[in-house]
Length: 198
Image 1 (tube, rainbow, N blue to C red):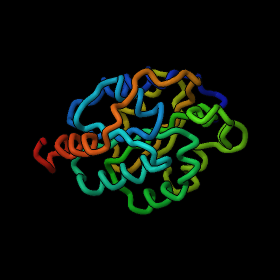
Image 2: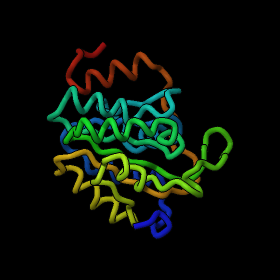
Image 3: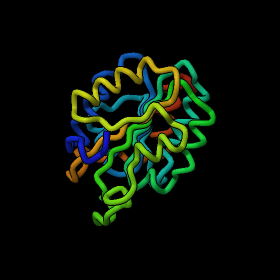
């Protein structure tokens, strides 16, 4: 399926649908900007990690968590512009094959936070084709909200890394993440069971 054949969805709605499916303390890494603003608003939980100012690193951080805790499902949320800055992460993830990592790309074709400049995904780059070409054969565009939920269900039972790409609108994030890096880190580490709460 091509990105052009998919419905344009809303990032907060899609994120809320993901959070509603989590039942086993799955870790969720929210990329910078609107991706983590919507994650915060959709369901604040100690297993969420909210990135600040580290563009393109949601998937590498998700990879680290997935390798460190192979019995925990890990979801990493990233925007198209951020992913395009760190494409090498896809082939690294494909080579390491973490069975518990799902990557979700929110593709609106713009660098939204910095002024809505178009990304290469707007015209020439197909995120799913890039992922498949990087070795992530279990990658797909979500056709609509119901298809997104089906892909998340499939990811919950997958035994290989997978990527779900979602075409989204340009609506701003719903919430605003509390910008306290130490608190974010400590709460997440507690949520993963590797540190006592402060």
